[in-house]
Amino acid sequence: MDALKLIAQSSMKEELPEINVGSTVKVHVKIKEGQRERIQVFEGTVIAKKHGGISETFTVRRVSYGVGVERVFPIHSPNVVKVELVRDGFVRRGKLYYLRGRVGKAAKVKQKIKKTEE
Image (cartoon, rainbow, N blue to C red):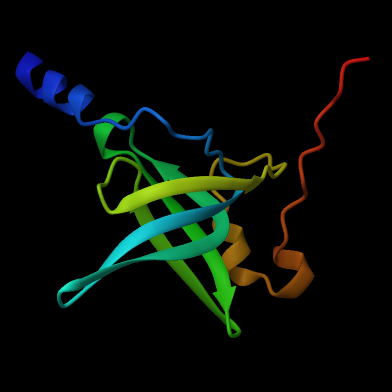
């Protein structure tokens, strides 16, 4: 069991931003098409985080051409090149599955206002 933990810790990524539910993120994903590789950006709202440790995943949702698209990304996957935090959202739930039934402005998440110290 200790050997598994050592392998898991060695393969974990160090430079990850603070990904919270409700945040808007840009996920840079490696796509392989035949012999070519390219990086595709998927931008959307994080609606769920699951598990923990090496098997941690997060679900990102966006609306593309009027159709809701959700993708589940493993945080420590070699195909996830980079995760950029666009903005923090203010939510009071752990999972935002209720956004699936909403359309337009009702599906928006409020932006978290950062307090500045004076």
